[in-house]
Image 1 (cartoon, rainbow, N blue to C red):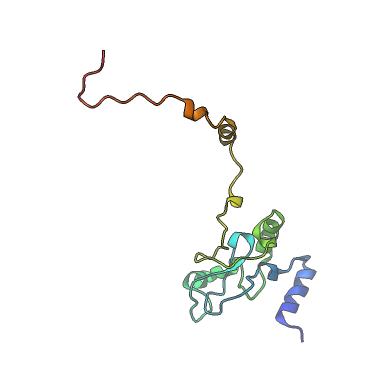
Image 2: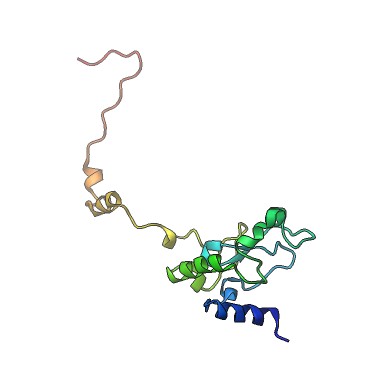
Length: 152
């Protein structure tokens, strides 16, 4: 008989879902942690909380919240899989090799300068000014002390 993964793959082909959910599964799954899949910048990750008897943490086990992204050892719901694929096509982390997660479950270096938005017009114009322009400006006049008489 076919395995669960083979059945899931066949169902995805029938439903027109050519993308493989395992692409959004962490390269290593910690058996002592919650089995819930997390967004992780579009790359897919594993919840870092300790699991209980259900295999999920308190948050993901309550109200079946783990079903939003699925479990790390199973398929991703079709609507969410489309979001993962879209994030991967848009240059998201899904198509890149995964870094080991940090303590917060994000890939190491996910806060790098590459993730910064493009500069604003103001930032661009400030960068275009000659570097000595700010240094040539006269210093501001000293502020009078409280209670001192103003100079004539």
